[in-house]
Length: 191
Image (tube, rainbow, N blue to C red):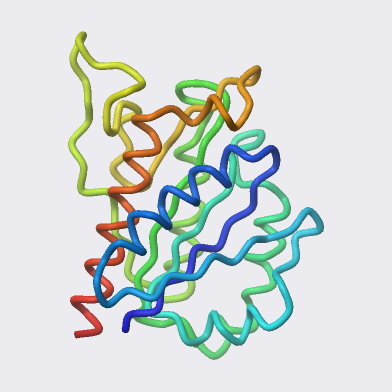
C-alpha cells in the first residue's frame, strides 16, 4: 500500500471541503492508504502525527490563501518540519498541494509556490494537476479546472459563501481528480 497524507489547515471550512474532495479522489485508488492530518487552530498536528508523516509515500499540502500566502497555522507546521528536513526523512516522496481564496485570483499561486518550495527543501517530487483548463466563453465555475491551476488545485470560495456553497462543483471535482492523480502515481512508484 502507498501511504498518502493530506496535511491541511482550514479557517472557515472551505479548505476542509476541498481536502475532503482530494481525499475522496485519492482514497478511490486501489493500493492507496490515505490519511488526513488536520492542522488545528493553534497550528499543531494531532498527537502521534509526526511519526506517521515519516512513513508516508506522498504528501498533499493544503491551506487557504490569506494575504497572499498560506495561513500562519500551516506555516507553523512547515516551520516545525525542519526536524525531519534536517535528516531528509521525506526525501524522494511525492508532494502536491491545494488552496482556495475568496477571489478568482486571490494570489493563490503564491501559496502553491510556497508548497512547492517546502517540498523542494524536503527533496520531494512535486506533481501538478495534469488537467487542462476550462478556458472558453462557455466555461464557468461548474467546470473542471476553471481556475486554470497546473501546479496545484485551486478553488474559489467567495467571502460571503459558506462551506455549504463553496468551493463550487468544478473546483471540488478538480480537487478529486488531483487527489486521484497523486494517489495513482504514488501507487505506481511504490509498486
